[in-house]
Length: 216
Image 1 (cartoon, rainbow, N blue to C red):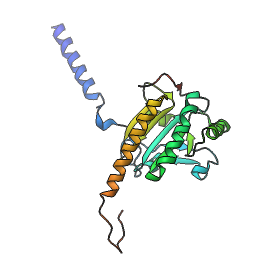
Image 2 (image 1 turned 90 degrees about the vertical axis):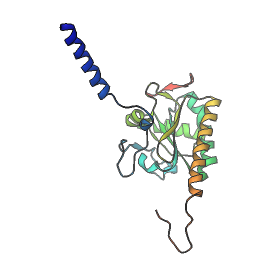
Image 3 (image 1 turned 30 degrees about the vertical axis):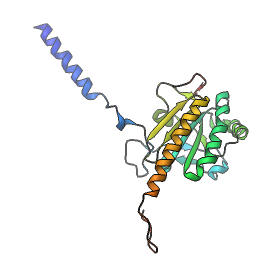
Image 4 (image 1 turned 90 degrees about the horizontal axis):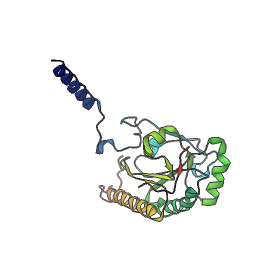
């Protein structure tokens, strides 16, 4: 009798755990926040590097403002040799693809009082895209849950959903990201091209690599 009761209790506990467990699948792909506040991702705000000309001296950036655009978040540390190696390539991507709609935001793991180090990093890499500071909320939502190594790049499509994440830097990592960027820009361009034309006089309606440094 006792064994039967124990078995029933164990089955009940197992059923409770299965019911309470979060559902994982395509619907759980990380997303950028929705501008209207709907969705499962809260508004994430990052502080920007003071006097950053690329951001016209904006003090902070709401990540919801990036939704609807092909966006690359580049997490780095100014003292990381592999970040220094990969940053010039990211700057080249921005120069090449910004006219097609690519947005890149660099997020430094450095502390805000270490802005001078970040500026030195930017000057050396000739970065030409906005730079801000990484925070725990962004790490929690977008960094790999098992590996916080940097450099770590996260690409989002125009639908706001994450489509690619890479950790570390090698030539093949760069090629993978370029391919993903071009695919997303092509999708965005296709959507624009197939949109209904506006008539004259009318108004338009609206695996991880070994070359990395850990996020502090």
